[in-house]
Image (cartoon, rainbow, N blue to C red; front, side):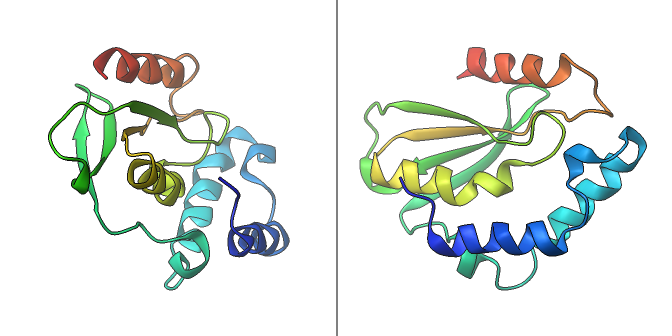
Length: 143
């Protein structure tokens, strides 16, 4: 699946106006940088660029115990078994969240069809390594 041209354009704009990339900030500045980027990406109208969730996909917010996850299901697929796709969003275990992958996860669920589980793992530096991989492993076992 190719990255849409509008999304590539958004990344180019963010790299120009977004300030220092979060991964290059000192540890004490990372949470504030992360929140600033989230606000920018969630500004009104950005779904026109980042992509919209296709119709026919349900999104359930739940947990694997302690780890929040989103479960994307194609509604037209019926009750039978479906393939499973696990999504661990990008960001180097320091930044990012499932929202940044929502269009991708929903599109995979719709087009494949498959159930997609997107993991909202804990981020460093607030939760040092190996918190994030542990959350991803727990979600994999849960799935």
